[in-house]
Amino acid sequence: MDDIFTLVREGDAFQVRMWLDNTENDLNQGDDHRFSLLHWAAREGRSNIVEMLIARGARINATNMGDDTALHLAASHGHRDIALTLLHNKANINAVNEHGNTPLHYACFWNNDLIAEDLVNNGAIVGICNKNDETCLDKAKRNLAKMLSERASSMGQDLKRMPYKDRSWLGYKTRSRDATLSRHAGIDIAQLNLQVRISTGHSGDIWRGVWQGNDIVAKILNLRECTIRNSRDFQEEYPRLRIFNHPNILPVLGACNQPPNLVIISQCMPMGSLFNVLHGETGIVVDQNQALRFAVDIARGMEFLHSLEPMVPNFHLTSKHVLIDEDLAKINVDDPKYIEKSKDGAAVNGMDEDLTARINMADYRFSFHERGKEYNPAWLSPEALQKSDKDINVRASAMWSYAVLLWELATREVPFADMSSMEIGMKVALEGLRITIPPGISGHMLKLIKICMNEDPSKRPRFDMILPILERMKGSH
Image 1 (tube, helix red, strand yellow):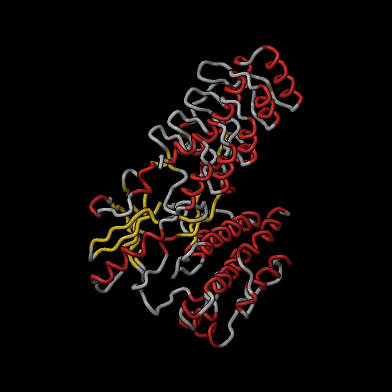
Image 2 (cartoon, rainbow, N blue to C red; image 1 turned 180 degrees about the vertical axis):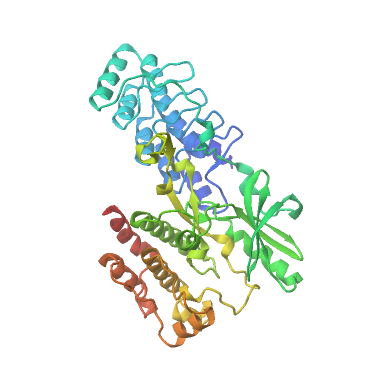
């Protein structure tokens, strides 16, 4: 079988889909020149593959080594349908590459007039100069330049030339990932540069460090004794946590199986967990719109996990097991909504709106680890607190946990904050203790929480059933 980049270039949609269905394949990887799969699909005009990649979570604004985005390539090669698809999915319309050229520069240079017109209609700025002090109008033929100038002027653009500015210091460009990252399942612990211990908990020590030039988090499992059987079970279980093909799942990159050390490694998310964002002093504002976006992200991630056969066992959903990712590759920094004025009048970037919630597979509980212990009972369903996972409907139980998480997003409160874990577990399981929904929560959210927390597990909805409801709620805000 050809490599995935060849399959994308040749437009073999069936084989590409087969490759994407393998959870260990990273669709955001890049080739030797950091061309991502989306770059190649946009360049070669493979619109069906472009749509497939975007649906699976491809980073729209990832750049290659020349700082070209997929939109640059679609504009320069005349693929109007792909350019419109990328714009519809928040492509950075005014992204500049290493030469200072925007997608509009290329559309004008190659005389792709319809694409050039689409770009201006969608907010492309005609006055941006490249490193040679040329605007897109300088690159265009006379008739096209006249039409674009008139169109931009009619839309209120100032046609004044904007000199080239090096923006690399802003750090908003995200290159396609090194393709080797998803290929290293087994890692030698000596390759890890563990720098700072973030926390010590019941499940193990969490360290921040560097591996192959990438910021990582390493979790060293806390075991009284690491037996041969533990090591064997660890080796069998961790590969199922390497889920690279969904944007709302944070995969385990690899693991070190070197007794007495069993270590799982994942990408560093500096903002931490959703629990930390909601209840800590992070300075991140989670308004109602952002809360709904988080709710949709988590529901999408859980829907995907529940679609896997076999399903990943021993994973309990809580806000502590959801990490927040500021995915800069999704952000259009030229969009006015990101520009705020500081006290001295300078523009600063404000980017909280584009935070993404990702379910952390590193919080999976291994079959040999902490058996019979539960440290986050506030999020667990009554049946999960009374029975083992094999004796309950795990999908329905996860929906209860999701309802508690919705309550947390709506109230910004910690469930049962004034009680101990043991007390919470006993009272939820045996005495009917339930979260109290305060006044002020929207009627739609109140109804959804109640539906998801139905006392009868068989009457709780699936994640694919509530996603359309959440999308409508998000759209109404």
